[in-house]
Length: 127
Image 1: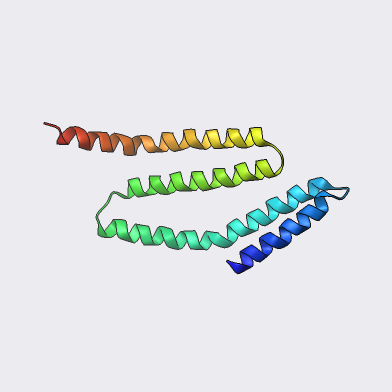
Image 2: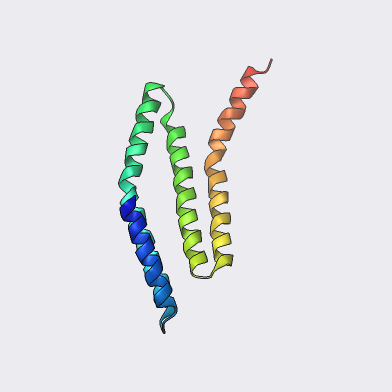
């Protein structure tokens, strides 16, 4: 975490100086590049988390379809947040809002089978 924090602080200082220079667009490129590097640094940790949850689902005899769907939903949420923040950093708040809206729609589409399964279970419990 200290390496990520150090990289973020150095990048922030560099971006502020570059933004005040004659090439303010370079600051956006620098921040997107470093944001991507940070994302790639934490990606291996995500695979470890997925493996742990898959093991727990296997032990509990849960349907892996639902677990995969939940991971897709989480992935969409994180990627959309990252993309929206990049858009906001570039001064494009309207585009960031559209990215977040699209992510919400995709999450709802992916959640339909889970919601349907829950509703089926509730209906079966009712007399």
